[in-house]
Image (cartoon, rainbow, N blue to C red; front, side, top):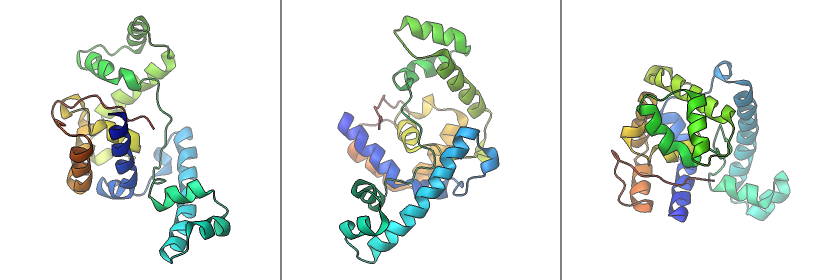
Length: 213
């Protein structure tokens, strides 16, 4: 299952250009970003410049070995660019909450939305993360529930999209449902990839999928 999940995450990463176009946020407004997100966005702009240079040489027929010499990028970096694996605008580290998302979603849906109380309950479940991580998750969740289709400000990361596409619609917020529905309609190849790589997926019930990068 881990290999299948990683394969689906790779498929999402390769589709990020299409995804950004489909959900109408191909251009990010820096004024809507936090300081940390703005730094990531600036890094993305730098990567896009490098990506364009590498892809131009690749399309002209230049071998990867020569592209490495011409651009100064590492061979692995050039390979990732050619494969379309460097298109995420926001690339968050894997969260310590990944394993707790199903439980957190259930608690949230049950009306238990106090971050401190959730964190204390998680500590009893052997969670070792900090209160800050849980508080930030709760804040993002509240904001997401207030967001509608017309006010989506940014594209989620590839890892987040892969997770949302596999956990089931019943567990998504309003804005997440709108986003995933748009992606599934606008990038049908991802739906096909999900069915091939992750068979027996139920879009309503979903199932826990490890999408660690």
